[in-house]
Image (tube, rainbow, N blue to C red; front, side, top):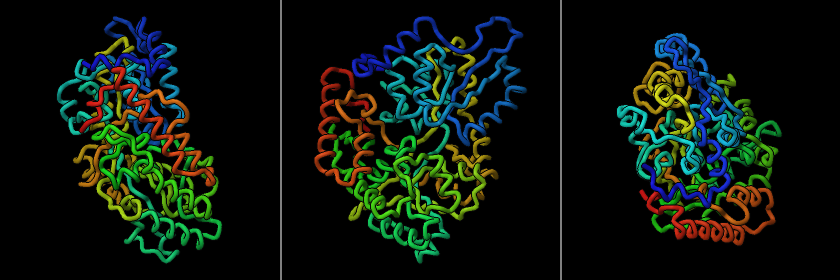
Length: 453
């Protein structure tokens, strides 16, 4: 079972308080009927989007066939994308949580600490866990106290996707894309120049959910294998190295100032960014393989290619941090854990992976990558996990009580205020994060071994 130190939630007081109310009487959403002829409803929550549409279609058929034979009816409920984590927290705090749910990797540690999720070995078959073993390493975001609490379903590798037509019009070679930050800046300027107000060099969606996680940290981790996200934590030295944010913040600032970034970065969400790329209005976008299904959902005809992540000048690409994403967990409040586990095994199984692949979603299963559904999808295949793609490690950042600004707030402020000095702000961030981490370790609230490879 999980290390008891992870349940002493001085650093997660709000979450723990909500969980305490939830756990009093098992507030699961499913039917508690003992009538063998009555279907048990298992409620599943997910983040809305192209993936959710594929899963929703899958369960329409599954409910009529396999589900009925098992005495189960799945009520699949996609939730608002940008408010998803907040909706999940409110669901548990108000005793209206689902039976199982998409548990974002970065939030799972907090959900475990709050007592909202079940240890999977207690409910799920060994074969299911064995298949997920590559993503259940000790320092995985899905494993706490040595115990897996979620299983991933998609391979969210990270690349820079480029519009090859805009590259060629700007005199750039799509076969030799920008490899460093200075090359990205030059390419953005060239694309914006030929775009004449209709197309711009780079998408920088500051208001996108997970912007810092997916569009900032990834690029710095790609050249430095010691770093983890959320403040740039070095697990080997147990220190924060936040000063290393500077090169990327300088790059983004320069493109915002030069107006070679897509307009309105301060309010740009992921949906708007993907739509802009899909309409041919941007030349470059650092994004995960999830973009392929989104472009397919939009019916985009843009000629796109996924290319390696650019890195700071003077550094080399040594890894391409990925997230074995869309993990699912079983709620601690479900009234029907055995049937919830049956649905869980369907959610993470090969049949669902094939349904997702049919919608251009990136599967985990190598056999599905070779299936007829996606073997000829050139853009998606360019996102296929390869040697450099490494599952990113978990980080203590989301478990800390930090005084003052959060990492996200500091990053956003520095991007939007070019007059703010980077050095002092990043030093102050590093000190805040380090102080919070050291205090949590000293108080026994965090075990440093959780984050070691």
